[in-house]
Amino acid sequence: MIKNFAFKEFRCPCGCVDGGDAKVDLLEALQVVRDLLGLPMVVTSGVRCASHNSHIGAGKGSSHILGLAADILIPNSGYAFLLM
Image (cartoon, rainbow, N blue to C red):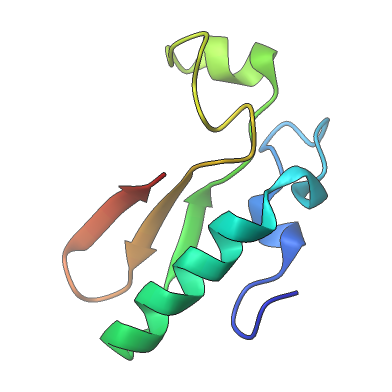
């Protein structure tokens, strides 16, 4: 767990891949961004299994499969972004 993020937030939506597969460097980078913005952030997509990744039309080499990327939403701001 990083200050404002927990591994469970990064779990594959189908449940077959544990959020613990998210790389600590990713969580630390997200925490830096959150601290700079001073705003809460919601992980909308973290680690994905290859099957789920394919199902949503993402590339075979997606950084999400490796636990190196996350899609983030900043509530009530109109901002969403991908951090890799």
